[in-house]
Amino acid sequence: MRLQHSFVALGLLCSSSAAPPLYARQNETTSNATSVAAAPTATIYPDTSQGQPIEIVGTTNPNFKTDAYLGIPFAKPPIDDLRFAPPEAYTYNTSSYTVQTSPAACMQDLSSGTFSYDTEISEDCLFLNVFTPAGVNITDEQYPVMVWVYGGSFTSGAVTPYNASLLIAYGQEIDRPIVHVALNYRLGAFGWGVGSGFAENNATNLGLRDIKLALSWVQENIWAFGGDPKTVTVFGESAGAIATSLLFLDPETELFSQAIMESGAPSTSPIGPEASTWEGAYEALLLASNCSSNSTISPSITTSANGTSLYATGSSSPFDCLRALPAGDILAAQILVKNMTVFQTGFIYGPTIDGDLIPDSPHSLIGQGKVANKPFITGNNKDEGTLFVPSTISDTTQGLLLLNLLEPTGLSNETFAKLLRYYPNDTTLGSPFDTGNETFGLDPSYKQFAAILGDAQFQAQRRYFLRQANQNGNAKTWTYQFEQPTPGSPGYLGVYHASEIPFVYGAARPGIGLAGFSMNYTEADSILSNSIMEYWLNFAHYADPNGPDGTSSSNATYWPAHNIDDKQILRLVANNVTVFTDDYREEAMSYFVNNPTVFNQRRSFDF
View 1: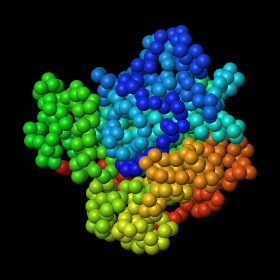
View 2 (view 1 turned 60 degrees about the vertical axis):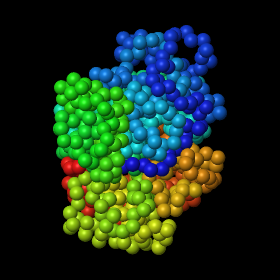
View 3 (view 1 turned 180 degrees about the vertical axis):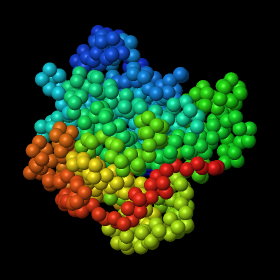
View 4 (view 1 turned 180 degrees about the horizontal axis):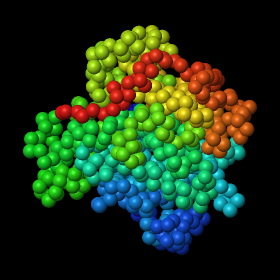
């Protein structure tokens, strides 16, 4: 999936969020630095330093009464021999690290318009940010930890936009203090490679391994920042929610206590039976980087990103050629591949079955109950599909072509016919939902296919994960639908994918908003944001969004746990937070769930 609109400008909340250096490990300093004597410090004793004390020097934001430690390394630079390799814990080689600048993002195309933030990119990107209440006393206080995993289709994203100052400040206001961690993980071919070369070299699902290593760092070190390693909530959105949900595939995991998944479930990302399923994407990357041993260059790629041939590098294999290239050449090749028609829609890179982290189809594992039995919240936005349908779509034929590219098995005529029966070209039934006959000046097929894509990729997969968890004995599950429009956004987007994030982070209030649009949040938005933050913070503290005794505060609607009989879901909308039954479009969504090999496995693209 590719997010086509600007993201949250949360970085504006912190004066210390200046653009980081290209190689962020320039933050290393020697001990006894006098220029930051008044800055907050934390002392860790990591195993990689043989138990020697390592001082981490951060910065304070007095306006929000928070301390920030920006750009702490948790893994060795994934370069040279560690490119396309599982991450290794960072070796701290100086006694003090000054971490006051948000780190570089992992390799990605910043020109895509996905995010609006000021940052550099680097292959050396495995850092995390820690936000705490100011002056936390680690002797007396151990706060619950919330670890954020960003989204971005597994090809974009960074920790930079996610300044947790408002969330932490509100937590202190309502006596729900937390420690917040946001982590970088590798993207695109660097972190989520597919194809035989990546599979044969144990180079798949590296982004997920990065996330797990960061969580191990939290378990070992977060106490030094006032965090409680026994109470860790992992939460994420879109690709970040998918990655979070995949952590559940290890039934014995002790890396986290509970999770919140915003618009993502284990089966949201199409996952094939093995990494080599989508061999076409791998061969296209080799051709675009001039690393293919195939002498016939595909006409689909007219320009190579790299002028160095496989043989000129002296590499013994195409994969070794990729490993030897400059990072910028690999990224350029990745962009060339993305611009090929067959790869412009949907996932190219992402999770894949590897026999280890993902031992089998997530859909199958969920059905068998082979998942961790941990409390979780999972939810969707009302109009998940609107961002992923071109506003220029003009008829059903174009919509079917879009589905054939997005849904990875290639849909049959019979499948198309059934989908169109479940989702007719009736504007009153399309997405944005509950907008009647309004077409927003677009062809009616836009609403039709926005409904299909939103349900196929998000709603149906959330519902399946949730219900199977209940059937397998997990009674501590809650679900929501976010229905609050974003002021100033185009009407045809409705309550679109990712629009809940400012509410989660406290940015949906007058004077603070999203980059890229002229958005003016209202006091009603602010009140809803406070309610959402309270639910999330309660969950982080008590594994229950209603608080310590399972009852909501006077300011929040009681949120009942979901069970297979009542199927209760919370509607999150200003002035009308209510509970209703999670059975909308039941027959249509069951069709997606009951046909996993049609809708949730990668296919091998020829190009």
